[in-house]
Image 1 (tube, rainbow, N blue to C red):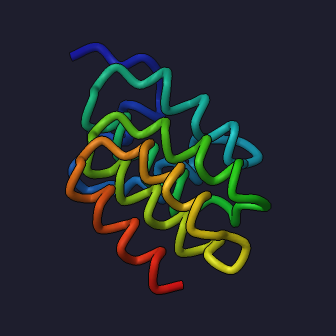
Image 2 (image 1 turned 180 degrees about the vertical axis):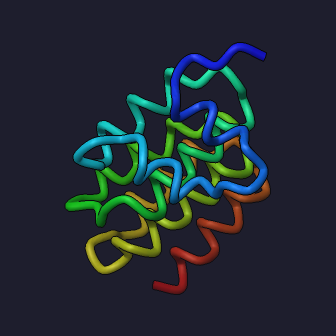
Length: 123
C-alpha cells in the first residue's frame, strides 16, 4: 500500500500508537490541524483512529458548538454517537431539555438518541 505521507506510514505500523504518530508528525498539534491531517489519510481505519485521537486527546472544547462540530466528523456511527454523548457530558451544565432533544436528533442510532433524551430528562 502506498502511503500519502509519513503520518499515514506511522499509523500503519503495528508497534506505533496513534498518539505518538500524531505528536511526531503533526507540527503545532491543534484540533483543527489534527482533523485536517486525518482527512489526508487514505486508510479508513487509520483516518477514524486519528479522528478519535483528535477529538478525545488534543484539546478541551471551548463551547458545545465546537464540540458538536468535531463530533460530526466521525464517520463510524458508534464513534459519532459516542462523541456526541461526550459533548453533552462536558456541557450538561449549560443545557436544557429542549437543546438536548435537538442534539439527540444528530445521532445516527435511534436507540442511542432515546437514551440521550432519557439522560437529559434527569439533568
